[in-house]
Length: 484
Ligand code: 5AD
Ligand code: SF4
Image (tube, rainbow, N blue to C red; front, side):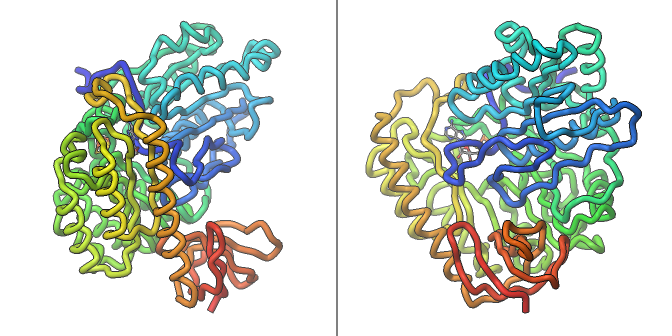
């Protein structure tokens, strides 16, 4: 039996792209590049205990779920004798973990693949693979268009990578874009025990049943599936033993999580009992799944951080209806008021789409009004792009220049709000989880509970430390502080 889910066109969850934080691809070994969401991952821990290691280069595009997937794929291939490398030049395998959110996503992957042609010519043993949502969407088409691709694997089949890699090594084409019945998480390689950085992503839920009219997730990642709470708890405990102090629970629709009898809030409350785990975050959520106890947890669960990414997409009820969002601007604002009622200092984030089919200037104005009313600390905004196979793709589009102009106006407002939220931190005391050295000598960088990047110059703090910091300055995309 296969899992439900139409295949054929399309992408993964959250982002890449016209986010105004300039998110781009990340490579596995370097962990470089910026990621739209909560935390930068620590990404280079493929086990080293194999005889003649082969080198694996993974380039990751898109959302945090892809970052998590890349880590798990690297661990799985680690058991086949691979170690991570941060350059494609000396790799025995190149794997592109792709995102399909943006227009022309597939074209970009084809041109990236083209750049590997000289490497493949020089080393016929080099294997090239495509994973992620472009792999899911395009399937065998990728191999037809780029014969040098040896392996294509969809997001639900990563646990089959060892077989696929062996097949590719035998010189056969290896393709798997199934929605298999077995749970891939149960079949992925055991996670390594080595120490790692203080923050980690943990995927607890995949897929989406909401069918927003613009979105391909329900088609590429399939129906909503939750991992059982006890498995999540086990993985979280292992991460904590390895030095992790902050976990971000991931899912395309994470607050619809039902792997725990009391849903996501039940999972969060259980996780909060784990000694050594100091911070919990979750992303991405749908307004209609903010259950009462999840709201309450923002007020009474100390380890749950005061930051919430709650996409609204538009402030116009007409457009929200056309998007099949099943909430109104008013119900969203009321929801925010309730959450702020229990956690007044909550920093809010959202996604917006401008230029959705049928959006008039008045509809767009309603979005600006909603932004003014809510006040965001951070947000991502996109120009609508038709995704083949989605209902909205059939509808007449808004003039492109007009949509561009609206996007600029919205981004200017969001940037102002983001700066105001950051500036308001000056003089305040926050708690920072330190993640890595900064660019300057003696500098350490970490994140506050509000997810602001904070740097201090101090030899009193080390990676993994939590320390109270007084913010003294707000600079472009970060805060400067002194340890108190
Ligand atoms: N066009 C533009 N933005 C989109 N998103 C999803 N699909 C599209 C699309 N077709 C945005 C939504 C979503 C975020 C992850 O990506 O805002 O919340
Ligand atoms: Fe896409 Fe809507 Fe599901 Fe979010 S809730 S993944 S936007 S269908």
